[in-house]
Image (cartoon, one colour):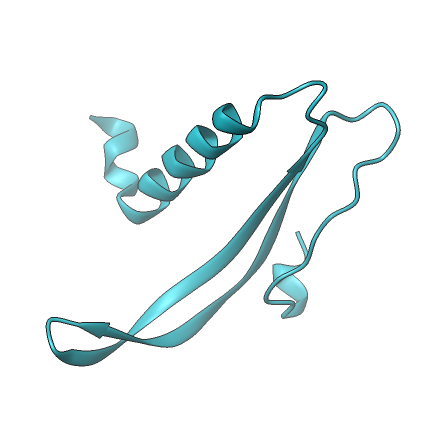
Length: 79
């Protein structure tokens, strides 16, 4: 996690013996169009690097989609 140092986006390196690693960037305010208006929303870049001999790309995509949904609606963890 380099986000705590203000790094917005990076690609982590998989070390020998690791199957994957999640790179988490800083939370930043971004201008986002929404319903014809420009709003300021908090965004965070997350990059998943994995060894495709250990993980299927479709499973990685599903993991990231689930992570996004939970970060956007954290109360879903308690439902």
